[in-house]
Image (cartoon, each protein chain N blue to C red):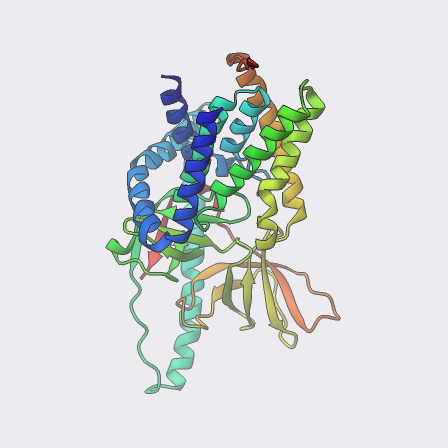
Length: 260
Length: 155
């Protein structure tokens, strides 16, 4: 019992010290522990994927599932590209009109990263990926999968970084509807993705693509987010709300891309 | 030797908690594996092993994006509370006590998150999921581990 008490006291002291001296003591330890755990986490993720693959092969009809998945993936990517092309057409139209006053859009660069872990609790929806400030990752950079936005880099370490997913209830992304050109804010939560603060005078269309608006300057514009599923606001409300459907399976992400 | 195995088990379980467990969510609800093991060990009165599982809180703090100390202090609070309740009140463990125990501890660990995002539905779902998994872990550990015998000698 005395040994137990001693251990408890040690843990309390360690935690208190860590809490107080976080940037000087814990951050380097956090970096080190994450570097050490990265290979093991990758093995675990791979083991899980392999096991899943093994069972799916037994249960499903041979390669059909795989082909179907590839086609779905390709379809998603094409949808995302189509949305981007549509957005570029719209942008091109505007730029033609205002030629000479608009700067050239910066060429976007994609950095592939592997998902190494997920948030251990259900309230904070975030992932950890294996690219950090050594690879040039910075806070607030957009992270995409299959062309669609999945989150924003929230904290950067040496070899890895945390990504706050758009389904987290604290995530707020400025968005624009592709056809109606309505702007708003995208918020996550248990009820799904909700687009809010949309002006009442704009008529939203079902199934229209939702893209990042680039307002605020943190995220680049025209990254596809999803499409409008249904309008959920009441008539008495001063802004419109709509439910947004993302094609991304957020609890099954393996590889993502950081937009630099 | 037992302590080394226990320590390796802690590391493995923490890794499971951040890699595979979040993928087994039910409507966003995720069970807390290290906490459930620690509580099960307390229920079968293996305080000597349960106290080591406080380290899982420190490890989770080192890996998770939450402010350092959250898991350590939550686990410590739950450990002290659970040990007190089991030693003082729950002498005979039965099904209702197990359910009550896991539900309350799940509420306690989730309580701090209600300030982050008040989602009562998720709180209840987590409690149900934790109780279900905790119940399985409890019987699994009870089958393999003998309760710690405490002999008090008064001089």
